Image 1 (tube, rainbow, N blue to C red):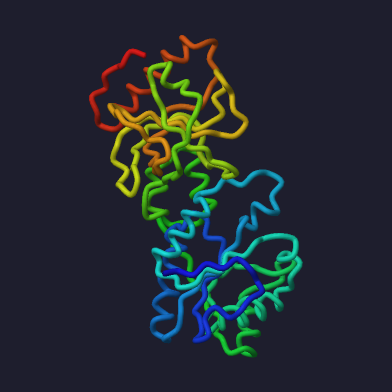
Image 2 (tube, one colour; image 1 turned 30 degrees about the vertical axis):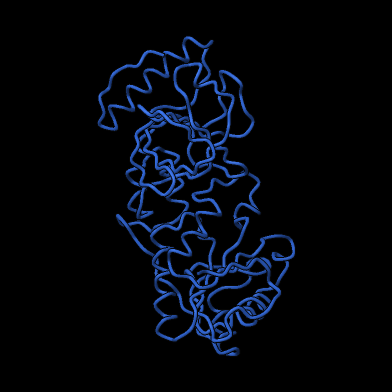
Amino acid sequence: MMRLSRDVAGQCLAPAGSVIAIGAFDGLHRGHQALLTEVRDRAHALGCQPAVVSFEPLPRAYFSAEPLPRLSSVREKLGGFAAAGMANTLLLRFNAALTAMSAEDFVRRVLVQRLAAREVWVGGDFRFGHRRAGDLALLERMGAQHGFTACPMPAVHIDGARVSASRVRALLAAGEFAGVEPLLGRPFVIDGKVEYGMQLGRTLGYPTANIHLQQRVSPVHGIFAVRVGLGEGECSWPGVASLGVRPTVNQVTQPLLEVHLFDFDGDLYGQRMAVQFVAKLRDEQKFDGLEPLKAQMALDARQARELLGMNPRLVEA
């Protein structure tokens, strides 16, 4: 079972030593997966523990003037670490104190004292510490002093370009879900707990299961054909979804994911639901009243059924 810690200070988490991966790991794409696999295999070879150091909030989000779209929630990221076989995750609070810490102090306090580093694996462009002064060369110098090896992880390339979170975000924003799947090694999914809403969809003929994204900024917005997984099940149930602020009726301030499952009859409140995005139908728009909205929802449902290989019957709202 993976052990999770949040603080720089504390007892050593791995007295027998660690092989460590460091990064933001948003989305856990194929490059991240290759890094975690290497760390796990090296730890097993050395007879010590595989560990990962990551940060929340994401460093880019902390410094950005604009909200940074997230490819994965914290829950999803931690689940990915556990699935990759990490024994320890040090999920550091990225705050003013951490940004003020020198790169040298980070190495001594986090990598050496907390994790007893034997190998440290990072991407070639990794930077850390106050004013991003730390890099692979500094890790190599301090590793020689403290008894660990600094190892650069080669980038993973697909279709001639490096796999990166920025590349995935750009494809998602363009609705290119087929192009995203090879980079992630899986379809793009948003997971969450179904919560009570205003039941507006039910009055319009399209009852929805609602997932509030809380503080997470989604990289996708609009109307989509989707497949849904309930509980621990696969994403197989077809549906149509809206992710936005509902500009026509009862507009919300925080984006809301609303999913209508085709031909479903049941109570989903309180259940966990995973929503796989298959195709973007259109952008969210404001309609001049309920009737135009209902007509468009019927067209959206028909198009989603077609894209999902279902009978494209037009259900009257």
